[in-house]
Length: 395
Image (cartoon, rainbow, N blue to C red; front, side, top):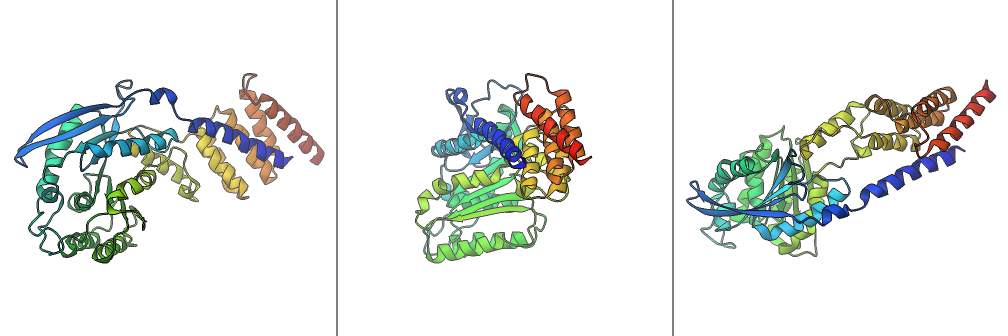
């Protein structure tokens, strides 16, 4: 009978979770809105163009604010980001967001912090990253914040030289962006100057609280050697608050590493609404911490959802950690005291522990709240009758 109960409860979750995973067909019929801005930059002493793409829900939700992705190398990158983010959003694994694509004028000048002196690259190029970052911080971001409903969670993303710039932004102003994505960063530049700068920064930044994703394709030789040196530095045990992820795509060309890595970059970045078991510690405060961090990312207050927390408890019962499961189920009832499902879950936890009295009491509490419109009312009644029979038999 207990096996039947476990299967029934799991099937309820699977059915409801599948419903959540279905694409929002209504949303898919709505087009994105894109707006182009031309900025007369006093810092760069030239005109710069940016394309801003707004979320599909932007007009329908006038009070909602959104995180922002700043993507280097222009609007040609928007379709890839949009496709990846839509899939994640349909699975409740990422928020809707604003994309700001920055068009190029002289990318080598703007993206590299130092002038290249190494013969294998274009000698004499680079050195303008400081000015370009000042343009983004002092002119572009204020413009975006003034014209759009932005949240203070910002991502900067770039490939090759743009990846070097994303890492430079981290080192120069770690709090400007909360996430830095560098697809196949060209850290060979100028005798490995970007790697040396990153290592120096890490040695002085033990409390770095940020997200970094890097990847590499089929590159070999000096590019691979210096990339591996960069990766090793970012994997430092001293950076306990850095969320660092990396990928190696050995059969992918340099120019395709952004396409190959975009899913992992954003899938690892954004916290899903359903808290994973890996985030749960022995301290129940880890649930609150998780949803505080989630709310900070998503730009809206998200309390621990009833079903998500119940799933944590069910996973614990599956692994026979009944005491911890009961603690999680009780925590859930504090947040959802009128939830039939929360009370039923606690009853299940006590039943798995062998405490029929408490299981019966909580099932009675669930039935006291449920009415005939509750879809599984008969299951609750049958479970109560079974628990009552077991209790009477033992007493």
